[in-house]
Image (cartoon, rainbow, N blue to C red; front, side):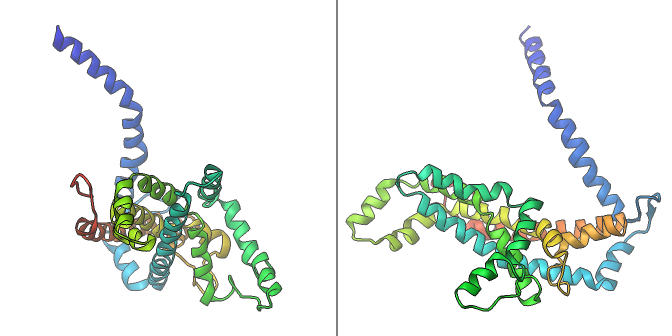
Length: 298
């Protein structure tokens, strides 16, 4: 009787998770397997897939100069935007962790860019802000500084795109803020008794205590940065002189501009492997550098 009842409850449980299982199989597992198969085929939307083995991969590495350009730009973009974004999120989180009047309002204001930051509308706004006669250059001119070719000079274009990413620090900020709330107050009280200053307490108490969240934020933003697309597509479309031609834009062009689905699938799997390598190295490093109060692992 008990087993029968248990089986009935199990069946009800399976019924509840059935939508998630179907969603995972249809929208995640199947596309993943299909893209792996297509990466070994010559396939466009109008033709049936033709198996070509490793041809797509060899072509990418030996005959496609834009692959190396897009990969190089993406690496620069990741290592340019990621530190600035994490640093901005941490600094703002520390400030918003103070007991100030109306602090909840300020927390909301600083989080809003993360909601709208990745949209096409904001990317268009960013383009107008940094165009030759845009608001940013108008402000510089008002200070007696010459206009900067933010989007038309390869020297500045990628940096301008990275600023859009940095502006979307709200999600990381919220996680940092939650971590800062968990730091025991008695540690600060003991440090104050010993005569420690704020900067010393930040580096000796605050930072070590939030390393788990710090590494989580870095990892998530690293993965997201490798896949950034909207800004490069809407603001510069890869220009000028391919200086903002990111990997995701290259993948998009091959799939939806030239309809080379098999080739684009191979590009996507190369990106997946690159992200996997960075993630594995990052996990390896974080095991030794992350502090957990309960002795757990990252």
